[in-house]
Image (cartoon, rainbow, N blue to C red; front, side, top):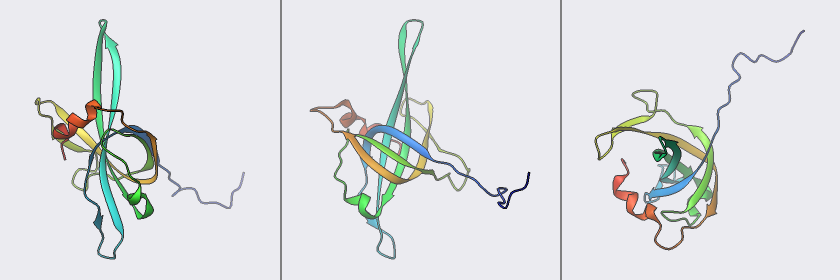
Length: 136
């Protein structure tokens, strides 16, 4: 079987993340004037252990640019993003931190190529109080 394509360098990685906005930075501009907006997403995982509900939150530090920076969204909104990971330049993996309760945690960095608001927060959503727990 012969092929005209050299697939030895073919790679593809995409993340699709659905979570609640936990923090929004001020919009910034690159030296060439390109707008950039960074925000964090909290993704909760739930499971039962010995008939007790357990939960774990994974944080994603997201970056969007161009027209996406004009999308109005707020802390607590449920959003879906698609993009690719940006590993920590020092470690090559996620950014590691210590949570306020002393447990270790990690935040994954990603550059978003697609962004969509799935649902708006309703009233006093508990995510509004999470901003002080965000590690960045």
